[in-house]
Length: 475
Image (cartoon, rainbow, N blue to C red; front, side):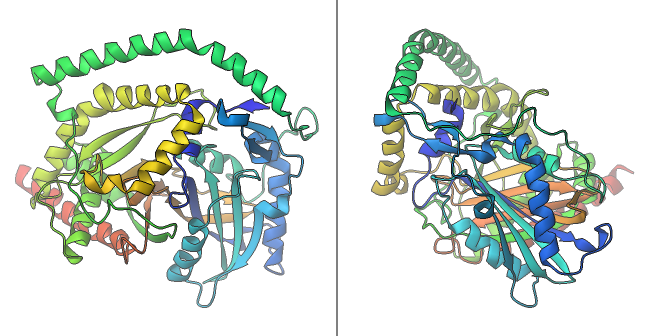
């Protein structure tokens, strides 16, 4: 039995029937690299199952299910699932002809629209046949309580190999055994003991919070950290109550183009990603009859994971960044974003967001869950401007080819959750010199959201032209 801490449990409390807190990815793979080849599509599915069986011990939560503490007196626990069934989690599917990008987007949209069964370990994987060109796709999703973006990326890399021949993985020290589910008295006793330890930690948390708030207030008054303190975003179609349905769009662009812009303007890769996403989102809004009079604001997750820290669980904070999308000139837009992000991560974003995440350790589970459900059900979010309009994540991936059960991964589309008040999620990951984009929206509130992925590539072309003009002027 393993207790879930507040940083992870918050993603359980944030989940409602309309806000699913799972993360996902879709990868397209080439089976022609499998040693010895394959005779029929089902062989790929069998290879994947064998691989997962050999490596399940590397990912302990993948055989663990949730159990709530009676009366929700403390955060839930993970127990080894006595009814674990691998066939429930690894499923076989097929795309309709011609099996192209649109068909894959349709399939993944359906997968993301379904909530996860909390009576089972919180992950699913689909081996999808019928992808054009004789290829197949792997679509996987896992609840945010298990992993954050960087941890999920690392987990998938551990599942994959550097060569078509799968590597040998050391067996577990002892065979896996399911738990006898703990009884109510055991859960209540552990919860009581954990709550007795809370007051001293609470005092420390209050002291830490006071110190941080004084620093933020001092910087605000002095104007020293003005650029790092983002304003709230405008009200847009992105920021309304959503349905449980999801629609995804996939895009891609060259990493070299991003680096060209980065080097020309002296900014970061993340700055460029924010700029092109902001420009694409504004054009999407204009096409749907909206023209905000101020900059859209992105919530940008930041990994605060230490180098040796385990990949499972959540070590993520967030900063809010105005994307300066109301500015027509690409050079000025990049300059404004660079100024804001320069100090936001170090001074305000990571520190304050991490501090807020730490407070979740003291949240009463029943109260936290009811608060989220009340907020979404009452539509209070429609009465005020959003703290951020969208979520945008940029996660570095491997620059070398990787393989799954012998098949080479050709493309890799990451997909994050829609969170309360932010009806669009854009996640970007790099792989083999290409930046892959996954856009997630609600079809009832953001129709044709897949066009944003195409708009990002078009916006990048403008910044590449601006970078070339800047370099020419310098020469």
